[in-house]
Image (cartoon, rainbow, N blue to C red; front, top):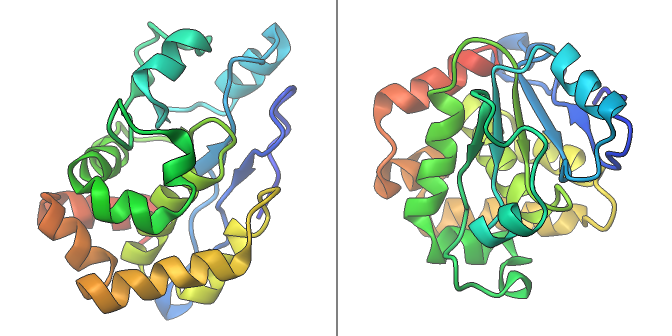
Length: 203
């Protein structure tokens, strides 16, 4: 996956080129991921803006967003959409399966924030850009038809991320819920939003 040159971000990349069914691939600039933006210098902020992002989806707790504010807070492109309950210990959600099982409504809201974003690049991040971001990116890619190997390959590019953990998460989705699309539908994501996410990625 192409690395994004964002000064002071340590884990930023474009999902462009992720294989999809029928010989397709995720379009360049359609879906971007990174770690937290609170360390961004003015040069880093300018680099994000130069990407032409239509939406920044911040998956952190509201208290995290207050304690380590995004330089884009207050900007029309920015949305803070926590992917777990506010009283949740961060250590409890290191496993994406816990996020999926305990927080379907929050996961649905995060997915919807991407699906309903205006036309243009969407940048998803949490703190390190690993667990919460990795789980949402996996759902988006799986709904678009990417296979488990491709999703796990992307996840493993994040420092500290284990490829096998993502394979386990996707297997959990299949066995317990019947796949990503069925999980999200059960969590409250509409068919229109699911289809919009597919089209956004290049479906």
